Length: 124
Image (cartoon, rainbow, N blue to C red):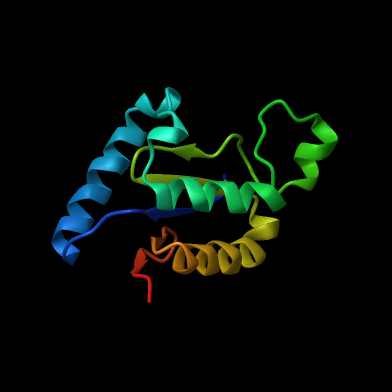
């Protein structure tokens, strides 16, 4: 089990955002996310967020066991699509990563979705 958070590059009112989030979660539940989009095709905000968070916390699925144990990720690489990124973290790093993801989401103009609390936080 992991501590999961997500960020979204979705514009529109709350209903439009919630509808798109529901579509994304349905996609993830169908396990279709095994084939990720090319990050270069993602919204520039998602690509910039990914670049920044993985600079300090690499998500290379090829990392050796010792490096993976030191990382905050419970699975790697992080999952992403054109307008979303889904982050699975170890509970032991939840507080630290929650703060980092929230800060970076705001910095990059992304919606931060706190999955455990079912709360959506818009940037700004």
